[in-house]
Length: 106
Image (tube, rainbow, N blue to C red; front, side, top):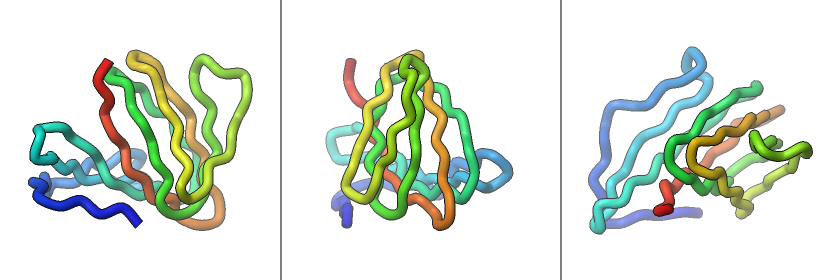
C-alpha cells in the first residue's frame, strides 16, 4: 500500500473518459507532483508530455506503449515507464485498477 505524508492535495478531480478514469493530484514537500487514481473496466489511450512512471497498487492492467509492438501485463507492485512526448494504451478488465503516476525528470 502506498502512503504519502506532508503533501498538498488538489481537491478537484481529473476526470477522463466520461468518468471511467479519475485521479487526484498531490504535491509533495519537494514540489514534485503525482496523481493517484482509479481506472474502471475498458481500454484507454493517454498521451504524455513529461516522462511518467505508472505504479499499479491494486488490480491488473495490460499496457501497450506507443513505441512497442507488444502488450505487457502489470499486477500489484509492478510499474512501467512512459517516455516524454509519447503515449500508451491501458486496458483494464474485471475489476478496477488503482495506480500512482509519478512525473519523472528528464
